[in-house]
Amino acid sequence: MSIHETFTLSLKNIWSSKTRTFLTMLGIIIGVTAVIVIVGLGNGMRNYMADSFSSLGTDTLTVQIMGRGSSRSVSVKDMYAIAEENPALLEAVSPTVSMMGTVKAGTEALDATSVSGVSEEYFSMSGYEIAQGRSLQYMDIQNRRSVCTVGSYLAANYYGGDAVGKTVRIGGNQLTIIGVMAQEAGEMEEGGTDDCVYLPYSTAARLSKMGTVNSYIFTLVDEEQAAAAKELVENSLYGVFHDSNAYMVVSMSEMLDTMTGMINVVITILAVIAGISLLVGGIGIMNIMLVSVTERTKEIGIRKALGAKEGSILRQFVMEAATTSGLGGILGILLGYVLSSAATVVITALMDTALTVSPSMGAVLLAFGISAAIGITFGYLPAKKAARLNPIDALRYD
Image 1 (cartoon, rainbow, N blue to C red):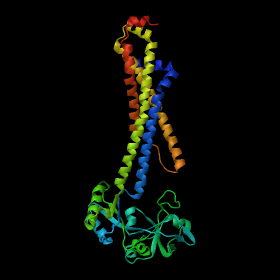
Image 2 (cartoon, one colour):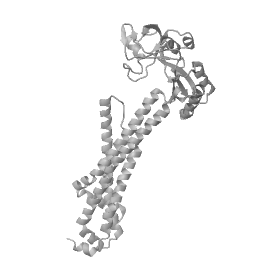
Image 3 (cartoon, helix red, strand yellow):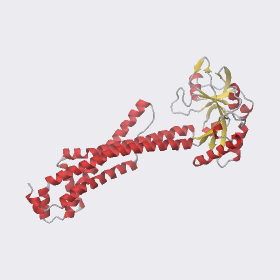
Image 4 (cartoon, rainbow, N blue to C red):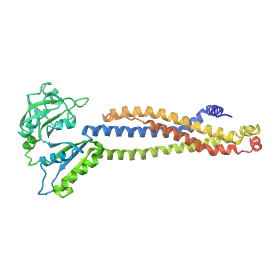
């Protein structure tokens, strides 16, 4: 009997007991569905994490100088020198100063607006564009001018889209708006990316009454060299303070890798737990095939009496088990995609987060391959039992 004939006969036997076959496949269906949805959720979380970090800049190093009581310190000039002396790893640097205080546009008090002091290079480092007016310039920094650029949310909602030349007050200090940034987010909202004010870091330090600037952002020449760049900056600062607790260097790329690794571990554990149902499904297939061998003992005896070899009988029952399991795998894949789409809608609605549950083709192929392999593995024992039946005893079986 050819493989095609064996497969056709397997489908016929499976179709003759549809309800029993479906219940047998249920464990496989649930297992494959669970694995696909969990892996899809993991992919969605990794993509969401990558998108979130990309907005922060995975090609950046963030440096915080604490000092820890040390009499030594680093100046802005010293930090610029680190970048200038290592052009192979560091592309640019910008001091940053976070300002506290009430932001007022006219008579409106804005509680969610972020205010930062930065250098003239910060905008190109972050990929920001200016839609109106101009960006900060070197002379603004040097002369500590009371000027700023604002996000498109502020310009549109509080200045009628014409903010250049107007003023904004920060902590009681009046600044002239010299530029409006192009919209960054898909939808402008309060507290979002476009709800911001940037002023010269020297002005921010003066208004905040800070003695020195303690925060810096470096951009990297190559994101793949993040670890080397981080080590370089740390060594440079250690040479000044001789105390690793006096500063902190954070690599967004390394942080993303760490978070992704944690997600991978959790998803792997959940997928393995979900895969246990595949094992349960395999046991169900073996059980039903043993019952099938018992029910079809006389049929097996007739086939052997007519000259069917053990290999043919073995192949027949293994094929039935593999087909049952494979069909369960296909149904599980289809259900997995349906539930993944539903999960995407539910997560987006409940969490207001653009997280897409996206099963990978590798996971789909692996789940189907495992389901088919389980059918063959757990179907072999019943098939071997059927193949070894004595034709005389089988014909006498009632």
